[in-house]
Amino acid sequence: MEKAATAPREIKRKRSRLPGNKMTPLMAIIIVLLFIYFLLVAYPLFWMICNSLKSYKEIYKNIWAMPKSPLWNNYALAWQRGISKYFLNSVLVTGSTIVGAILVSALASYSLARFRFRGNQLIFILCMGGMMLSPQVTLIPLYKIIQALHIHNTYLALIIPYTAYRIPLIVMLIRSHFLSIPKEIEESAILDGCSSFKVFYNIFLPMSKPILLTCTILTAYYAWNEFLYAIIFIDSDKFRTIPAGLMNLRAPDRLGRIAGGHDDFRRTADYPVPADAEAVYPRHDGRLGQGLRERNGGTRQWLEK
Image: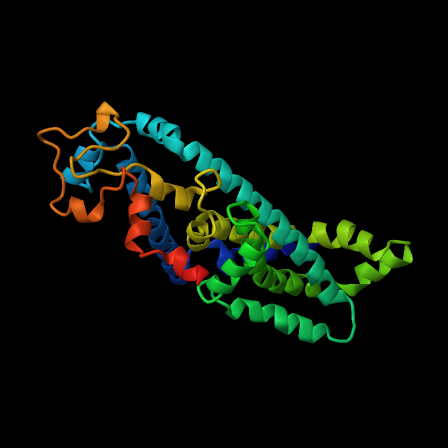
């Protein structure tokens, strides 16, 4: 009886001695480092949001100051200027890229992880070789292929390259996770009459939600922010995504006004325009993107040669 009575006390003492129940110097250092990392990531976002609520006068006067009176209508004006169209294009391109990349990579990963056939390792090595190719290196061949397929100035001109460039990384991640799933689960399902596709759909995919979510985030981050292909493969303003479309928003010309004629942004006597505004914002019908293309010296004509 005495042993039985003292047993819970001993268990409580042992639990109290576990390192996870009290703060250690190492844990304190880790928490401080994580907090510093959070500040480094969060501060640029906070600064960007604050500047988006300022007028041009406030930005040029003191870029680090807080907005005196937040201009929430800046978002409405940007949406009316064309951001809505670019936003929808980005959603369509990013969503299609995610679906295509995850679907193809998951099926390829399942076959490479579970099926044994001649050339299995060779196919995987070739697939991983795609991670060594830089988008800049393949720019000219891709441009020629897109022109030959007659998909220039379409959504497919962005969706297909984005999907192709995401497949190697996603295959590596999903295949590694599939290899960690016990084969006994798969064998039990096959004995119960499941086909290979049912095993993949009903067992592997539900058990792979964390890695699939990770791949979705990585793919969305890449497709949403990609800039090079978006300005080379798309000429029409109808299909531009946000990174390329932002170039075509009206920029201050040499009169200090924002093209488009909104009185809220016209130059006043106390509007401090930088001395090099002419060089930064060339006058090409108020379109910054057009000026960038002219300064680039005809990149597209060079690609076609």
